[in-house]
Amino acid sequence: MNKTKYIFVTGGVLSGLGKGVTAASIGNILSSQGFCVWMQKFDQYLNVDAGTLNPNEHGEVFVLDDGAETDLDLGHYERFIDKNLNKTSSVMSGQIFSAILENERSGKYLGKTVQMIPHVTDEVKSRIFKAVKASDCDILITEIGGTIGDYEGTHFIEAIRQMQYDVGKENILYVHVGFLPYLGASQELKTKPLQNSVHDIQAMGIQPDVLIARADFPVNQKLVEKIALFTGVDREAVIPLETVDSIYKVPQILKKFSLDKLIAKKFKIRVKNGHTDGWDKFVKNINKPKIGKAKIALIAKYTGMKDTYFSVTESLKIASIWQNTELEIGWIDAEEIKNESDAKELLKDYQGICVPGGFGGRGVEGKIEAIKYAREKKIPFLGLCYGMQLATIEFARNVAGLKGANTTEVNSETAYPVIDILPEQKEKLRLKDYGGSMRLGAYDCELQPNTIAFNAYKSSKKLSSNSNIVSERHRHRYEFNNEFKDQLGTKGLIFSGINPDRNLVEIIELKNHPFFVATQFHPEFKSRPLRPHPLFLEFVKSTLK
Image (cartoon, rainbow, N blue to C red; front, side):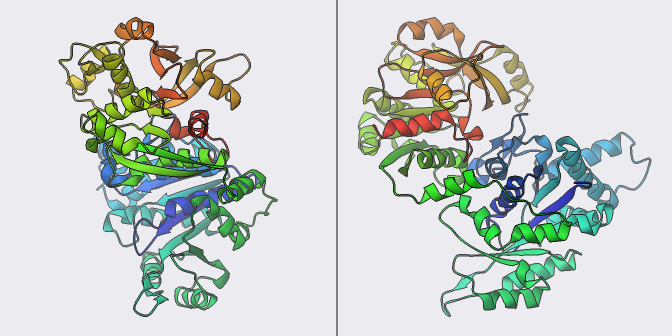
């Protein structure tokens, strides 16, 4: 392809429509046809990154290999195009305005009056071009966060409007995603909110090339024609997208409505025969009759916002599909587990227990009780990040006899700090450099032979013939305290994964247990529909025995 093509995805009517899934699905379709696709998200928030956003309000923080803390939509992108993204893929308004102020203070604007146009919009466009340069992609897909009409996002809309003049209209495609609400009184879908949303973006200088009409009910052809008439979008480019039982079906739906051909027509590129066999087989297996059922308890701190653990639940779903088993996830509020009897009552009907990542002291003792129940009752257990640290604490207290063992994150005065912060990180915390005090991004993990973890990776062909090293993503501040390694090891705790550069514990597990594995890293960030993470695969498999 001689010149990079740009696809911008905007949303209207309301948030939470699935712009991210739509953008990712477009990426999936184009990637399957052999195009080099890169993806990017613009978020309106004045935060510099997603690391400080409350997960109970905004959902999970998705971490990339380079340590970028991003919006959960980046997880959609990676799962759908099966590619590791980087920091150029996540841009927040806080980054834009920080750069503007730094440039102004350093005199880079040569005394000019700094304004939204051109300085802010130029900075936005520079992030678009940086992503293209870093990825060397054929097609860049950029999702604009928020909803058309949000005043805090106007700089992004103006920047993508200008792009058609910077790179040529023939190289730009605008996709607008809107919602058709259902009116129960008249039992019909209403198009007016979507029409108004398109009129709003048209008033800002952008004419959508493609309109995705999201709805919870079937959209008939008459409605499609009406939407096309009142928005000026070609009828064949108005694509109804009804809510489906799995987001992984969306690429097939968009392709059924010839979105790939619409894109090819606009960009004057040839539609290729896509290699979709793997994806099609995966989607077919979603509704295939199942041979078993995995009932897994997720011991959570945030139960009011399921998106907080989105990558965890998606990894469990993906693994279940590969294991051809039905999945039922039980959401257990960790604070409801106050003692051993609570754990027994709440967890007695589950075949697996998962304790995901988190921070702080709330719900910690409930999670520890759940881990104890899993260990003693031989219930398959998977601990992730904080879940690994709490599994260590439970073992130290109840097997190694270190009463009161804890993490210094919760109790800085504990006599047995089996989880502690590294010395170099303590200084950063003292200076209130909270982001700099974390271990973020991809780190190597050397697997120990003849362990559950090693065998899981090996069976999934994640290991090369001459290496036991895998790379996994991290987001945490505290570490296993190696001063207790020998003491806990002699009591039966197995250290099956070690970071070779800094001798940090990455994976722990137990013998004589169906499956008891906990990781300091976040395996959920690297699990993909066509490449499920081996630890999730083996965890789900173990619940069926």
